Image (cartoon, rainbow, N blue to C red; front, top):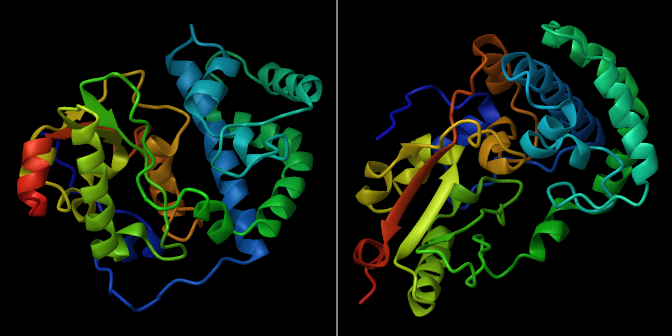
Length: 285
């Protein structure tokens, strides 16, 4: 079992720790705040690319960018919603930008210098992203995933069902409504059972966060294992979500800790529970 007692970060994300049901503490972010978020995530992603490349010289810049960051999805090259799979019709231009970014790297470069140089390259492709995101509100974008906060594919053929998490409670944390969480967890458990799965499994930074793992059986936290490097840093919210606050602002405090230590405060870990353990915990007969 992996223990992590680090504080969650800035005040917005820390509010998840003690949610008050029925009381909205969060507000929809402004355009200025969204620009700050995009700049924060892009800057941190660029810093990470150089830091990871210095430590893993055999990996290409493009591979790190595509497989370990959400950088392209946070630019106007992504024609879909912010946290969706990248849809790009300007691939030639994107390839040219990636080539420019690659040219800024040299062996053992200071990641801060790489970040600064590459932010200048990406600057023209941030404004269009802002307009797109403000045009399509997060409430609308997340509504398409209804009726569950846990999207999953029942046809994976694996022993345990893997799932994702969406914030149906935006701008508050999805952990602020424990009744909804339990309802959707029950549905996923029964769906998994009906499809023949042994249990459910989740690989995410959230497994080190008490407000998350206390909503699962004790077996969930007890089964926790560190996702083996290099897979534990990937281009999804399972890792990068710790730098996004509950209402989609940039978690600058966690980012600062990441830059200082070279490791995230909440590493990506994997937890699992069986259908029997889940049904007992959830009171399903």
